[in-house]
Image (cartoon, rainbow over all chains, first blue to last red; front, side):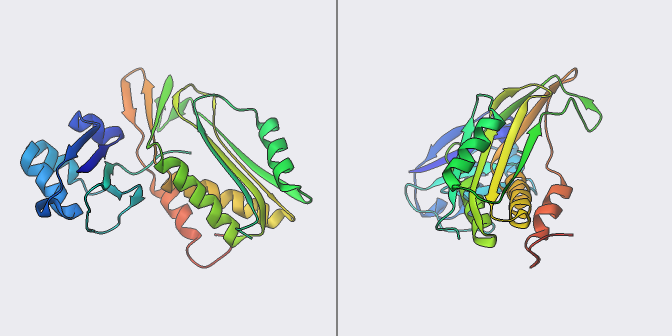
Amino acid sequence: MLKVLFFASVKEQLDCAALDVEWREAVGDLDALQAYLGAERGPQWREVLGQANMVRAVNQSVASDNCRLRDGDEVAFFPPVTGG
Amino acid sequence: MAGGAVLHVSVQRDDFDVAALQRTLLAGAQCEGGVATFTGYVRSANDRCQVHSMELEHYPGMTQNSIREILRESAQRWPVLAATAVHRIGKLRPGDQIVWVGVAAAHRGAAFSACEFIMDYLKTRAPFWKKELGPDGGRWVEAREHDTQRAARWREGGQRGV
């Protein structure tokens, strides 16, 4: 199972904070997972997750490129951070 | 120096007492030298929009880990004796304290530089998001290019930026 989390404006736009996705080869990397969510959930999801400044993290580390996902991984989508 | 530096991170809803934080920082470091600190406060206006209050969201777990990593990196770059970063989450109002960074070092140069480095990295790497609530409702604060540029200065080889 992949645990997928959304934060801040992304969470609000999708009206979703977290969901589980069964791991399989079709969601075996970040780009594939993102494409799957867009296809499964519809155009609004595709558009929101595809925003140019979207940050993706795997197991709580920012992933600057596409990367492999393993069963049990935690994936997060969020906008650029604004703390401090 | 990173191995010996006393590093402390707190992400909390409650307000904090800067004098108490500084005493704790000094006690942990057995410090001789100096302490540089930065305290951030919530603005009452941002991008010409009035702010009544602010809601601070974060990514539990990743927030603490990313700040700890920033402190560790600061202690690798400078001879830091101790460093603390405190960041608040939840509902805040203009004038409220939001962030505190303190660095103890034997000399002021390291303390000032490490403190500035920690703030610059915290603003661009730690997963916090501000939502400002004003007369026209809520709006998510946009990340600033200026902050990204400030953080990037530290990558350009220098111990201090421009």
